[in-house]
Amino acid sequence: MSDCIKDLIQNMNLVIGCTVGCPYCYARNNVRRFHTIDDFSQPEFFPGKLRLMDKERPQNFLLTGMSDLSGWKEAWREEVFEAIRRHPQHQFLFLTKRPDLLDIHTDLENAWFGVTVTGKADLWRIDALREHVRGAHYHVTFEPLFDNPGAVNLENIDWIVVGTMTGAMSRKVHTEPEWALSLTRQAHQHHIPVFWKEDLVPVMGEEQMVQELPEAFNNVLEAQKTWNSRK
Image 1 (cartoon, rainbow, N blue to C red):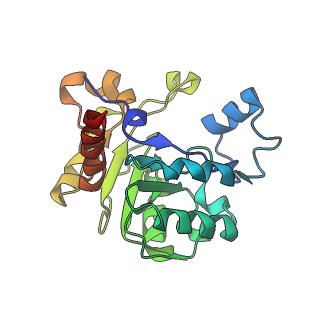
Image 2 (cartoon, rainbow, N blue to C red; image 1 turned 90 degrees about the vertical axis):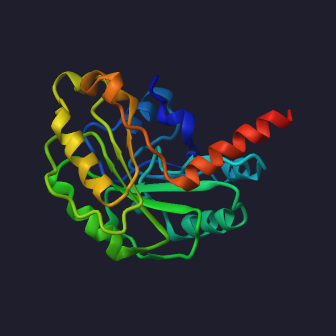
């Protein structure tokens, strides 16, 4: 049975809103539905949510599920980075579609910086990530895949995630099995773990699913089991 990535990595939506403007954005639709903020194109910071980091139980957190790191104000980012430094028991992930707008240099060992790639036209984002973000860990999310990215330079990448379109647009956009298989082969050649999101089950078949996590994430999940056994 395939794992749902949201059961392994929890969303902590410290910032809501995004300036990128993707036509398929689920976060914008959610904001419109639930009226979380007034204007999705004007990101807002919710520092009160930082208290979620205070839990001693280790956790893997995605901090940009409702935003893009490129839209964060520098003051927000610095406040979050300082909180991350105080909570080494957790792992933290960031994603962006505009790494060219960033200028980050950090020694945080539990911060993972990534880009979203939807096809060959977005491959520049991987190079821009390595150029504009100097961090300990890099990852790439190939989701939703609109076309075959082809050969990918995965130098210094520590993890890749692959997924397809979900929701109403899934009837028009289809990820081909070979695209996911090619990315997986390329990653494994560099000993990079690969995680296929659960929405690929109808495309790839349950028996073929690949769901690998970086060692640091697995260590968190193992610590959670030990933590639960104490209760």
